[in-house]
Image (cartoon, rainbow, N blue to C red; front, top):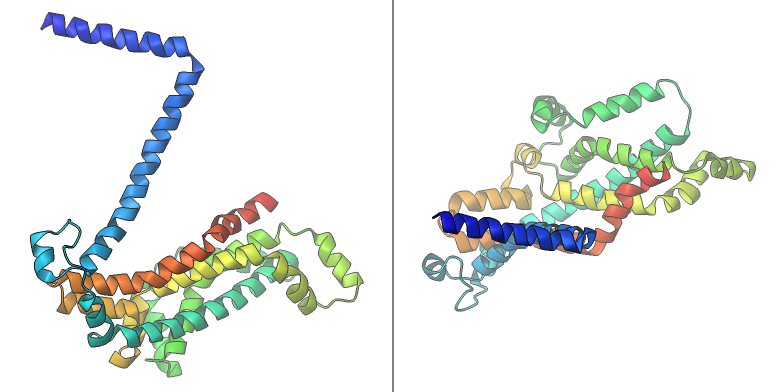
Length: 299
């Protein structure tokens, strides 16, 4: 036993001596290896759930019960067809596109205009209003359920998909306003003053100068707004009570209750729901980091 311990300490001493002889180069190599392993672990935890969902959606129930984590012995598309046609995800998909499409357009217009006002215009209570907007960012959805429900019912917007779009805009707009304000504050005031000297109005300055300069942040806001509205469940559940008006998230919740034991069919529904999100993210991913850091860099 003593011999084993002594051999171990001798081995450790030799390793330390070797690293010391290499100096700073060994430390840098070790750091890079640790960072690589850490990033590899993060990538695995991100990619594997997607991989498991895809292979599960392409399995039969029997194949899933026998080999849950193995690649399917026979690829089947029956689950995708069942979720799309039989469950009715095709209708829910269209409803979601309408709600999210209208919501994102209004979201971008409202956030960019409000941000321009907060960043470059002078008016009374500007700071107080901006702080109020920031305060709305921390409000949880549950707090707004009762007042929003009373407002929606009084306006006759219950079971109205466009009405849900406006609710999404109201709830997600504070973050967009904050993001765009941070970017517009970095735009030199001299540019706006030069536009005024050339005879440009406030609207012309906003449309022809501020909007083109804010393209990276606007693209980032569009992606974030799309993802947030696409994945939202609570407000859709409360304000779209008719079966013909449901969104995809409501359809998935319904599938989980009805087909919870048939995991491949549920996985097929999740796969259909995730495809647009993944496509949008892959197309616009280069704008996300650029847009989020643009305001900080310019500021």
